[in-house]
Picture 1: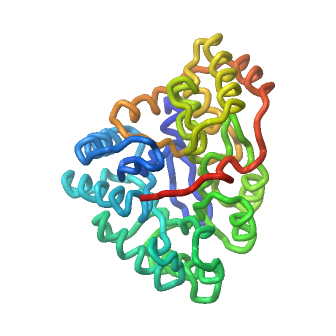
Picture 2: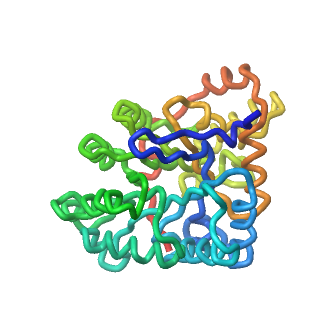
Length: 325
């Protein structure tokens, strides 16, 4: 019997098969400005070994996570193991120049070269265009010969099997999703028990045969540990209203004997619009906990109670100051 955490989805345009769970590794690049704590190299290696030794062969990273530390640490772990486990899928992202914010075709090609070198691989199964909203000029991304053209050319050249769009702002993403035949998209913090801003975007993606990968189901931690222990929402201090609603969710889960994190994760996993869910992990224990939560038995009565609770539809990161390094 296949557990929920080990289910897979095949992307129809590319034939690439991805698991229903993906491990996010931005925190493994040591990003204290985002997460509020540091992750040293030893802890990152232990976490990566737990991922590579486990039953879920899918992780997500990016060129700019921790100024390249995430990819470098992944590459070092791969080298130490003598290569990736068979069938393991790496998802990474093309990034802008972090000093000039330039994001044209030449920068996209340079970003891929840097990723391949850091990871120690010859190709990346799933490759995304990352955060075009932060580019110095969006036209550099979309123009003929720009970053998007470079991304699709990489697929034609066999440097990746599938291509995606990974970003934050839905108003930037939706026009691109209409105009380009991506295989997948990644959205974060915008489809959780507390917020559904990405709903219409996910419906558009489904209609266009673009697989949805939903990241940050715990809304940066508050839906995993609770407002008392992790008062962080969308990478920012949670306001009183968010804390109150998180407490209400936690209370409902407690009445049914279900960890809130399990409900938050499976809320994403059970949605028919979503192909895979990215869960950030920064310790071996969190790797196993993710698997346990994905397979937790949750009664229908709990889902009915959670469905009756309020949620937001606005951008949860509208006031965020992004510090990727």
